[in-house]
Length: 119
Image (tube, rainbow, N blue to C red):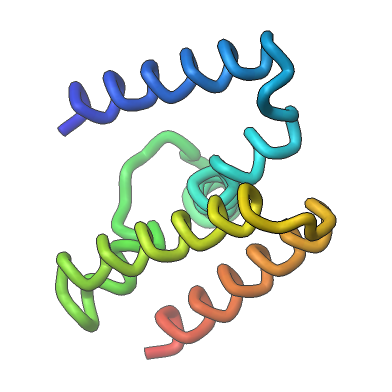
């Protein structure tokens, strides 16, 4: 629930700031770690403003909701974890330009969104 989400978020931010302070991680890498949730929230925020004028009103348009409608909750959660972990591993294990990773992650997100919105 929300409590677990807040605790995990606090722990992650604490470690991100700690590692950033000791120059063990760059700011763009922190951004890439949190990219998928950020872009999903930004898309929903903008969509809700245009459709209802209420950006804080809850709905079931998150990517994991769209996947869960077709394939079930566990598949939705595992697919989101897999996408996030893949992006994190690309950041950690490769020397790919981070801008290229952002473009890659955005295109994967848009393709998934298009596929699940269409069905």
